[in-house]
Amino acid sequence: MSAVPINYVEFVSGDFAASRKFFEGAFGWRFTEYGPDYVGIEDAGLDGGIARAEGERRVPLVILFADDLDAAEAAVRQAGGEITRPQYDFPGGRRFHFREPGGNELAVWAEPKG
Image (cartoon, rainbow, N blue to C red; front, side, top):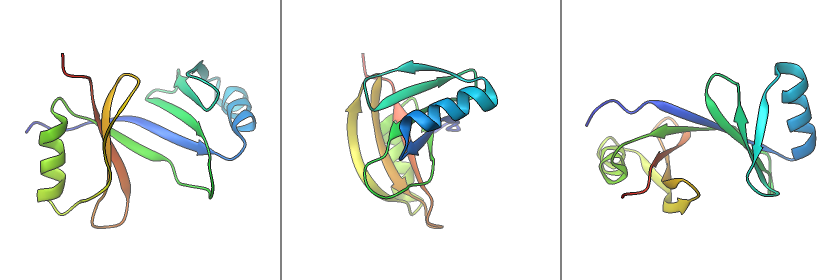
């Protein structure tokens, strides 16, 4: 399998409007709305988004991109990663979440199979 790059960073916010206003004002980021609970970040140097928080505060989620999601999941499992959220569809593709042995949670996504 070829190298899997970091492709996306997803922030989770307990005050969605305040987070958006902060990033716009502090860094000049622009946003694309994907419904009432999610915005995509533009002009940040790396793709990303902000999701409305439900429950307790969470750390940002680093998302990797793979051409073959099944192969990436197999590689994660073989290397000792724990799947924390099985593969699921979302607008634009499919992804899964995992925890690496040091405790960090990440996700891998792929475009839909044609």
